[in-house]
Length: 592
Image (cartoon, rainbow, N blue to C red; front, side, top):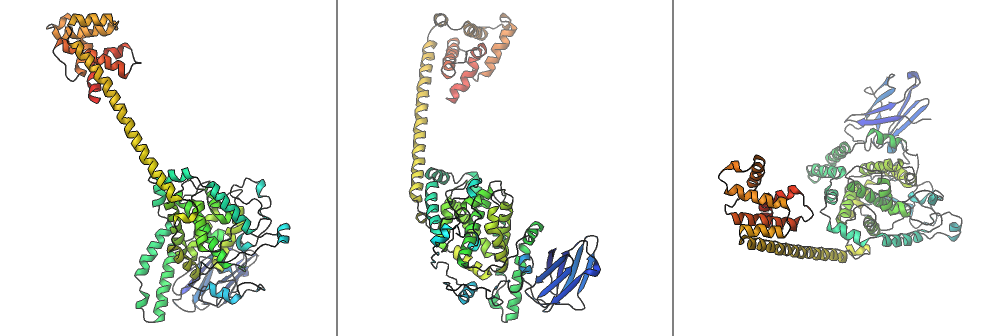
């Protein structure tokens, strides 16, 4: 049988089900309504939906078939008018049977079909944990040691709920740069952890961290830190809306339930799934999980969401071709097949890898990523599912890293809709929101590195200041010497200056220009000078801000400009440069 594509929506009185079933005959369509369940059959399609509330088929119920589009629309009435059906957009949850559905605090949890004999936690305790708001996330748990025979036979388990083996047998023959486990099929969990810690210590770069610390005002890093995610904005809107509903002031339970339904509807309207996301949910495997270690599953979710949030923030919401690698390598769950036992060890590992692998390795950026994890968990299962579907989309498109969707993400997407508890998720969000991590807990002396970076920056600034001061003093001494030489020449007669220039083998064009300049100043008749010379000298005269009338002083200025020109630009000796000495002198001296 084929499960058709479908969508479900509701209002106060009715539930609307739209089923896409092309190429069927209207006479072959069958429906069945039985309290919580709705069944549809039209060969080769079969659909069974399980709702959180009861539906009935009465005189207001209808069904219509659009043969052109292949859409079948069914309208069912709610048995309790005004009741809010939960999670109608979480399609995997609707497809689950009553036994497979989660116990979200409203109904009693279903006892697993198989119970592990000799397990450390009884079924009753597991159910209590699932529904407990005050679950102790820091309760230490020891990982079971793998039996030596299992290690030799390659039966080490990993992946979601430790239910896979043999998948990574040939991981080293592929270009998998995420995996850091030397022998994933034989190494125990403890050996993988020891190897991970050693790899993180070797990967951490002191200079890289200090450079990012000193340049945290860099545009890219600052934009990543200040970036506001869509889900974080939704959380703020939800919190503002919640303040308007004071449940404590409601006297009767019915009104309180009505307010709770309004809150649930508002959150559902804020977080909507796209058509592509709905298709991904339809394509998820049909599985029933019997979770062996619920705490490890929840903590693994925190690790995955942190690596996703860090990449999402660095790329400001736009995944790149490197996102699959960036998420995979930061997540110890993916890269080292890690199984966490406490919330503290999970967050410390997130920060260690967040400061060792990404493009930007900044403490404040890691703190912001952890805030994003809190926002996702605070919004509940719908927000978590939306984030997981985006991660799945990123990994499914990669020809190597798609394997991590099969090992973890697909199962997480099914689990979050069927077995995960909103109460446990929000309890975890509360713990993360109030969790404080010190820099010395990550195992590296970050405070000392930051102090060293600040001292190095101050020393460089002092050295740059002294170097610039010395350069200015040297330049001033050179200019003063040149000005003294020009002042001495100003005391010479015009003939002595000309002879001195000839003796020093100055360029004849410079001498000719100087004489023409003096002739221009002394002459009362412009006809004594050729038109070309007058035009050239007039240009030089206009370019100079103050033309001195005294012949000897004017020529001295001309000579000082020549000296300054040779000091500042000794390699430029073209005729045009020499002819522009008077024009350049004024601005040059003013600048110096």
